Length: 264
Image (cartoon, rainbow, N blue to C red):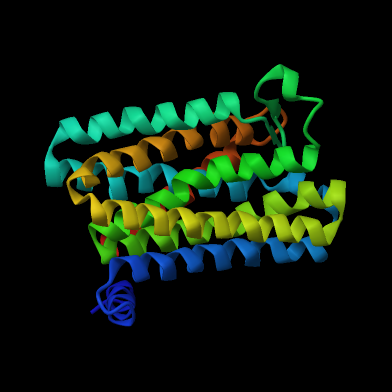
C-alpha cells in the first residue's frame, strides 16, 4: 500500500466511513496549510507579495490538472458527458456572476466589480472578498470529491493544501501592507476556514442529493477552471515577469498533481 493509499484509508477509518466527517477533516487540512502559508507575513517584507510568480504559477498548474483528474473526468466516467458538461457551464457561470457583482481587489489586476462600489468598500475588504471568491471552488472541490470517493478526495485535498501555502502568503501580505501584519495573518487564516465551510457544505449537499453528484463534479471543475484561466494565469503572465520561470512553475504544478492522482 502506497503512502497516499494509507493516508486515505486512515482518514476513512478516522471518519468511520462518514463522508461528512471526512470532508471536515480534509477541509481543516486545507485551512491549516493556508494558515501556515500566512505565517511568514510576520517574517518577510511586505513587498515580497510582488515576488511570488513561481509559487502562484505552481498553484495554477495544480488547480488546472485537479479540475480534470479529480472532478471532470471521474464525473464523465461515472455518469457520462451530459450532466458533467451542464455542471461545468453552471460552475463557470456562477463564478463569473460572483466576479462581476461582488466588488473585490486583485493584488496585480486591481479592482473588479460594479464601478459604483469602488469607493464604497475599503480595500482590505475588497482583498478579502477576492480570496473568498477564489476559495469558493477550491472548498467545493474538496467536498465534492470526498462525496464521490474518499481516496480521490484525499488527493484533491493534498493538492489544494499544497497550493494554499503560497496562496495564504499572497493573501496575507497585501492586507498586511494596508492594515498590519496581524490583520493580514487573520485574513489569510479566514480564507482557509472559508474552504473548510465550503467543503463541508458541498459534502453535505451531495450526500443528500447524490443523484446530482456528477453535475456537482462538473460544477466544481468548471469553477476551478474559470478561476485558474481567467484570474490566476493572467496575473502570473502579466507584463514584466519571466515567462520561462512561470511556465516552469506551471509545469511543476502539473506534474505534482498528476503524480498525486497516479499514486491513488
